Image (cartoon, rainbow, N blue to C red):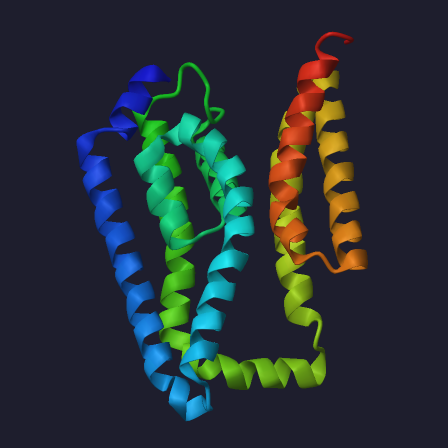
Amino acid sequence: MGDILQIANSTAFWIFAFIIVAIVAFQAIIFLWIAARSAPEADLTKQEVKTAIRAGFISSIGPSFGIAIVLISLIALIGSPITLMRIGIIGSAATESSAASIGASAFGVELGAENFPIEALAAVMWTMFLGGTGWLIFTMVFTKSMGKTQEKIQKRNPKIMASVALAAMLGAFAYLASQQMVNGPNHTVAGVVALAAMVAMMKFADHRDISWLKEWALGFALLIGMTTGYLTTFIM
């Protein structure tokens, strides 16, 4: 795995990562500039614009820490530049973790294994990049028509879109988690505890209307599961 990480952290990957992040940062600046210029049309004062920007910046800190917890594990598996490229565009640590695991499994190895070949890293990268490409292309082509489609779906069944997305995510995580949980009792206990912690945190966040906890829940659940798995090694 050490040789693979040397390749994954090579200068070429860092160059591409900085280019991609620079493009994302440029887009963010442009959107911010357009929003500031359009503020008078929405009857917003300069002070209100500053307040909105400050509130958006502060509210983004919490979710960023939640993602950072997952990033630590991704960096150790696929290197810093690739992780930066993916999270910099998609922004979903959960999605990228799933994609990396699926790519490694498709090649026939486990993500992070000692005998992880360079071909498996290529499979992981193709899975992650192609998986995110569909979203970007769909957004580019169908953004204008999504409003009409959403109105039609909401008239028929407002919950159908949320249900389909939730089912897909649950299926992906259940598939990945079950592969690990069958490896031994320690893995099973860790998976069950992490699942219970995730459900408990989400229910508590909904009950108390704590939005930041929903963003941090995955990271906390991972830490709880890993801690439980480590502690159970002394018992089982």
